[in-house]
Image (cartoon, rainbow, N blue to C red; front, side, top):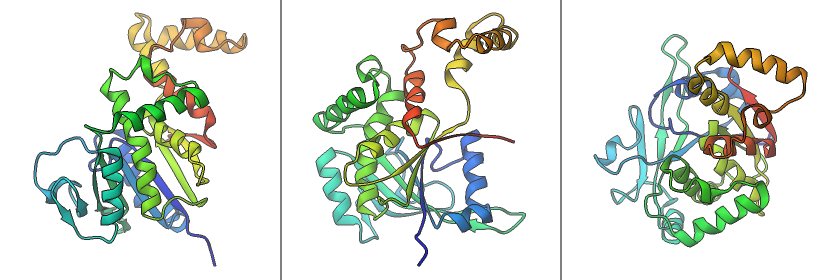
Length: 267
């Protein structure tokens, strides 16, 4: 019997295509070769708002099966979800979203998990932050005042608990971090002692370099010339442009070296 492969895509574009990541996901979920190789796909991300009705939680072509925000339950996972919510003081929305390629007719309906991390239990999250520093050198104390960082750190341990609850936490499960947003969850997967997740960092940009290019008056002209010289002399970005650790994206993306694979978006 062939083992079922599961891919967990952690991103901020779970319920709608905002930019490049959404376009990549659309491509995955309507690509027959991907669907042949990956039998179960799960999208994971933060719940950005509790406003609106249950029917709109998962966006266009979405079907909500569970929402603690709305008191809606249409799945057997309800009791397990409630235990997770009580432990982490989080909210969970779960369901499916359908992706269709209008030209080929290929479609699929990956599961979607949204987590409300607005009021998560501080002790549980601080324990995770402690592990992030001790095992991977990620200093949350430098960035936890930035919600763009904090929400994805809070998301991570809850996401792992949900994956375990829905039977998506064995050695055939791959956690895919789309840019920095998924890195805390990928690292949480590495830390999980009862599971053997595979982990992938999927780069859609080079965040540190983008900031350097955008801030310097020479922009690309400066950067590519400097990069060529630095490459010839085996110099790293911190040695050329100074310490970048004040930038939270640099810290999280830097931790991608602990993932099993690093991929980059191509044409």
